[in-house]
Amino acid sequence: MLRHVGFVDLPAHAGSGGFDHAAVQTATGRVYVAHTANDAVDVIDLVSQKHVGSISGLAAVAGALVTEGPAPALVFTSNRGEDTVGIFHPDAPDVVEKVKVGSRPNGLAYDPGRGRLLVAHVGDAAVPGSRTVSVIDVASRRPVADLPVAGRTRWAVFDPTAAVFHVNIMDPPQIVVVAAGDPISIRRVVAIPHAGPHGLDIDVERRRLYCACDAGVLVEVDADTGAIVATEAIAGVPDVVFFNPALRRLYVAIGEPGVIEVFDTAPLRRHETVTTEAGAHTLAFDPQRNLVLAFLPASHRAAVYRDGAQ
Image 1 (cartoon, rainbow, N blue to C red):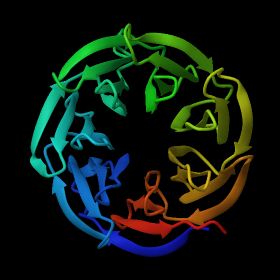
Image 2 (image 1 turned 120 degrees about the horizontal axis):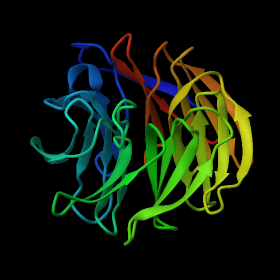
Image 3 (image 1 turned 45 degrees about the vertical axis):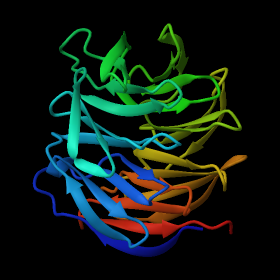
């Protein structure tokens, strides 16, 4: 069960937009959350449960992603307001390198073995060819591929077993599977039978994708074949989802009415529903400490929950 253990106060909104995607550096317990309203990424220390700083100058930042592993960590940001990706080291957050990418970058996924970052672009329906996914070689800070897709992108995840990126497309509803190795290419397209694929995460071990759709449906997909395995109704239009591999649970953020829906995944079934705050559509998850954070736009703070096996 999710047990509420505290709140973390965050800076008030300077403009519109609230919070968006967040990522956790598990080694340090630092959380990096896109504070879109402030053109900034806020940093939370989970050990002290305090806001410890903000990285500014990231126009309309939509997402954050943190690398893990033996190599020095990096934080990536998708800066939708200036068509760039930001790259910085957690120990030097004031030095942000920016790489020019496509139109309105959104979803991010990282292949640590090849050092490649996938950037999924929202694009502009009025501009032909603006809806693409790009792959950036992080070492050289250069794009190595740009692939057109059928519609507006949502979130993306990397699958290390199959060496592919999975990218949600809003309309037509589908998951695009992009080969991470050379040649970088679209391997296949998986049709999703429900409108608006939005949040996406993967159970690498069981080979399952979890795709939360605007139609109010959670879809379980075989990551290797694209077959629909199961579906469950959810309480409204979702956004961010995170999979907990230790407990085999999925957390789904739904901004209206403002809840986290928790699902067991083997088999897929609702475990509980936790009330957060109206508009709270985004989460962070720390698998090392088993903590879930819900970002609350009305009160500009993060609610912290600890999950248990019961």
